[in-house]
Amino acid sequence: MTLLAVSVAIFSVTEFLPGDAASVLLGQQATPSNLANLRERMGLDRPPVVRYLDWISGAVRGDLGESPRSGASISGMIKSRLPNSAILAVVAFVVAVPTSVAAGVWVGVRADSKLDRIISQGSLLAISVPEFVTGVLLMLLFASTLEWLPSSSIMLPGESVFSRPSVLVLPIMTITGALFAYILRMARANVIEVMNSDYVRTAILKGLPMRRVVIRHVLPNAMLTTISVIANNVGWMFGGLIIVESVFAYPGIGSLLLTAINTRDVRLLQSAALVIASVYVFSNLVADLLY
Image 1 (cartoon, rainbow, N blue to C red):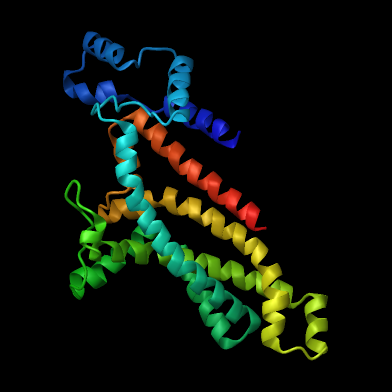
Image 2 (cartoon, rainbow, N blue to C red):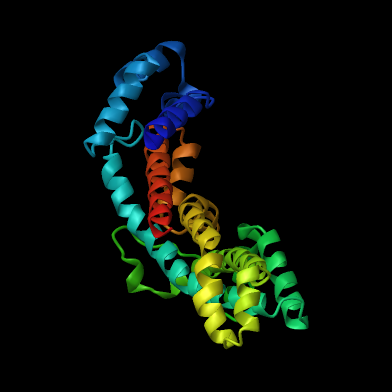
């Protein structure tokens, strides 16, 4: 039901975008008659309800149709890009989540210490800096100044990202930085809240070792809200990859979404947005099960 509502919202919003694929294709040669003929061939002249039902019924069957602009299969375009974005998201997730949770618990147990204040201020700074700024700074440092890594992630058609793993490093560092800082702050805040609870104080007064108190009493309760934050960030990683992938010209679903916007390829835009929404809904379902 959530995905059905999201599909209606996506379709409705894209209906208000200025221009369409026909006007972009014709460009300056667009005349009323040429536009009418091309829109008829593309099916853009049909009522919105008919176009929505055609699109969503195909999506349920796994057939997203063809791009009105390029004529290529949208399912094929997404399948070729989605694994690339998944690689970025999974690696960033595997690196950032365990380290950020461990760091958040460590500083949360030592709340108000000097190190806690330093880490808290540093994480706040990392959250405040937009991803495109972080990406450009990393590019200037590691690509332009040190010349250790390539400045862009452009790859030839059909080329695998594993053939040149170096193109993954800067995008992953950019994503990991924001993800690490956000989860760390949430884990820290939850640990501090649980550490001040009566049952934890009782466990400490009973003489239980601090390690056992943290593992048996603090972590199970502090992780509940943190799990929700992690799940939301999984969806954010796929939706927010449009910024990171644009900075590094990485061939993922985010850059595909941006291409669809620039070319007014509404059918491709709707389908890519629906796929990202599906990832978001699924990640929240996993979080509910983990509760």
